Picture 1: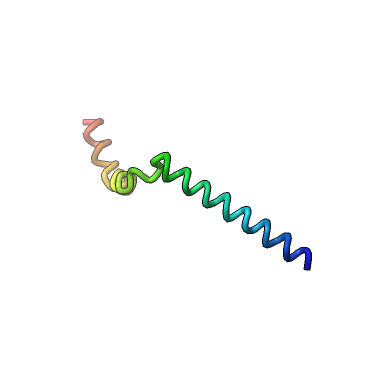
Picture 2: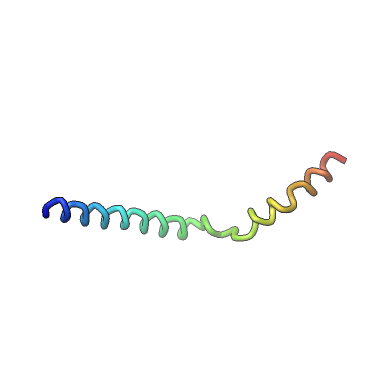
Length: 53
């Protein structure tokens, strides 16, 4: 039974660490560019063609 208590405490600590990391990411604007990467992937070839012309 004591192992169960230990696992519950450890899982709450891990969940708290992930919550803290998520809050830090939001506060430091890590999610600011939501569409840039997906669109950059689609149009990457066109930009390279213009450079090498």
